[in-house]
Image (cartoon, rainbow, N blue to C red):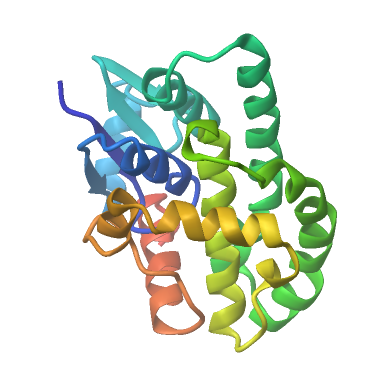
Length: 222
């Protein structure tokens, strides 16, 4: 049965699920909405339990809420492990969700300079030191879905800072940097990151404006 992800034409709350599917080598298609009528149709046919995106169609289910999607994919494709590992991974996943808020809000910030200098640093300084020791792995068998989420978050933050000509925040955190390099160097992630399923980072300017416009149009705000 096919797997399909529906969202806006960009990163946002769907990118974690994209990374998990890609890392687990799960073929999936995606639908980037382009109009309010498409979104409204999903709301009216009860595809969206809480009338909001993203939407993951998998195993005959219509899963909404980004963290519910993440957990479903994790439990289906990331192997049988002990309850203690799942609980620990879920806690790390929640931390990643909180930390990556700076990326989710980035395209919509009125001043990218203020955002990256004032809003993001407290998130980095709080979460990166806590996540760094948890990112240390000795071999691939230790990799859980939470490690993939850590890598996604670090990778996107590095892109954000590089887009402004600033040093990558992962530079000072060896385990985070090494884990991200390891995950993104796997053949399946190289393929995903270079595929048309991967939206470009919404750097300041035309690309960012296009993503914001897409979101506003789909939500019926324009």
